[in-house]
Length: 282
Image (cartoon, one colour):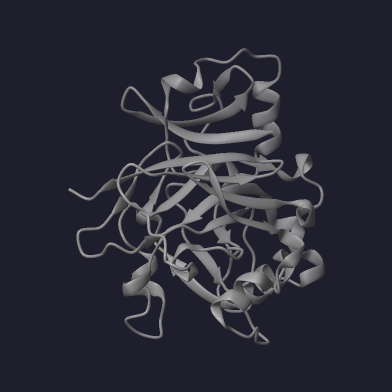
């Protein structure tokens, strides 16, 4: 099942995506008005039943995509997780994952523009696989961790490189307004039985910049879920952005940074393609 968050005629909603558009579930399930609420209430099965046999209520062209989980309580990102990216960055992999937090308000949806900020010209692309938690919990053992996953999506973890390296902490360079593309939809785990089969490809203006196989990561999904849960309980709708493969712009010679008019695509096989144009901050 594919699920997405959107706005239409000024109203926020969510629904099931099929070949013809969106089946609107915004008012179909009592007490559940958004995708995070659907996960919190553990009613994915009810959503599937509600959508079964129904035609699309409107075409994808008639909606504006929101970030997949606009109101996630936390978005936790993993740095230098792909071994190829660690090599190009000159980093060694330690015993523990390098994590940082991204604020939900920095995210944009599919087909919305990434913004080159006024204060920097070093906006870089990072195509990544996003994991969405379907339920909360603390002190989760790795062997139980996949039971907490609702599904997968695409993420462009846009980074402002000069700000990222002002200090040793990544946080500020990873939290500029409108730099995190997230979507277009969540594909539930019943359609993706093995996340190690996932790959991520980033294209800039049609040219492939990055490709990575998820089985090339140092820290897999169960490890990440378990590690974070020992410090901070997960909540339904939380997001793990699992790291980017090699080929990022600032490590190229000469460096490549995003500029107004560019189009970035992040494709995750078995999920779909997140597309964002690039504009200058006004």
